[in-house]
Length: 171
Image (cartoon, rainbow, N blue to C red; front, side):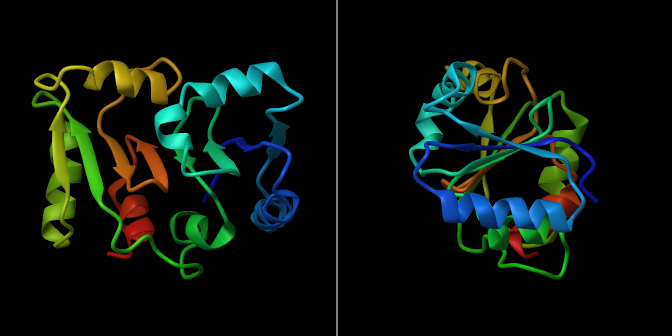
């Protein structure tokens, strides 16, 4: 189900949590790399681009070389619903913000999915909101990706498949 490289960022103080994440990804037979931002300048700079959302805490899990998803204060229970269906605890009750654009068919499809599932969300039109495109570019590592979905302080997903988002949210 997860066929992309996974990066686990830590600040050197969450060995137990990082160990749990390593075991989780090994169990899914997923390639991963652990990066300590106190030892790796490039990793520290990458995390600095997420400063407005990274405050939620370490460890941070990044899915994909091209960033597909970011999870803050990550643990197997919050990742499992999206990547190991039937396991873990969905992020129910977290506010959902969909960054979208009127010209984007993937945005309309995702919004229709959330509406049909009865999932409340806030929509931010990046064409009408000052700073929104730049924020997405910073979060995504340099790409202007819509839809981008922010789930509370827990996760950012870039053009997620609706079913993956639905499992993560428990809908």
